[in-house]
Each structure stands twice: as C-alpha cells, then as structure tokens.
Length: 102
Ligand SMILES: [Zn+2]
Image 1 (cartoon, rainbow, N blue to C red):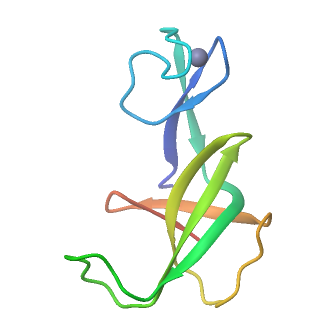
Image 2 (image 1 turned 120 degrees about the vertical axis):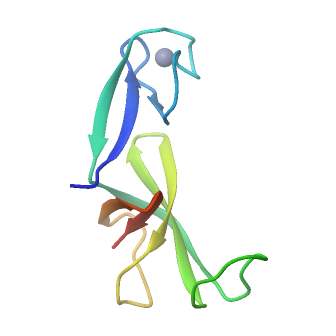
Image 3 (image 1 turned 180 degrees about the vertical axis):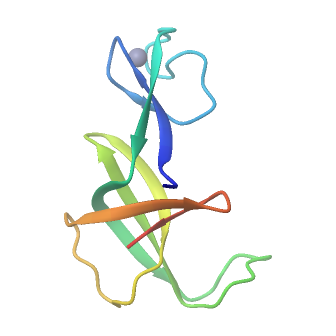
C-alpha cells in the first residue's frame, strides 16, 4: 500500500510530516512512525486556472484532509464526483510523491 507515513510525537501527540528529527510543535525527540490511508475531508476547492507549470487537466480539485484532530494535509482529488461533502471519510494514497484522495 502507498500509505502516507508521518511521525507522531510521543510527548504531545502532534503529527509531523517527514522529514523530522524533533517535533515541530514541542521539540521532543521521540517520534514514532504512523501510517495513514484515510482521513476526513476538512475543505476543498475546484481549481480552474492552474499555476504556471501545471501539466495536468483542469479543472481539478484540491482537498484539505484532516488525518487526526488538528493535523491537516492537502491532496489532489482522484474520484469521479463533482461535489464532495466536508466531514466525510476519504481514502488517501501516495503515488509519484503526490498525495491523492477519493
Ligand atoms: Zn511534540
């Protein structure tokens, strides 16, 4: 599986993106790997005018996914629907260094 691997702080519980040696929230040095294959849709937007250099089809949807309370990541939508529901559980997949959700 192409999980999203993060590091969870043993002291404060904050999810840190890789790479990290110390927790970005509290500075503690004991971080444990944690894998995510799903999260909750926190927000999303449909992009019609892409940034320079974007070489995929438009429009496309970018979502903000909450992994655990307060830990957010952005991901590209790879599903079929045009309208999504904030708060719904979504699947996550890491592919070619991009994070996708559906
Ligand atoms: Zn911490």
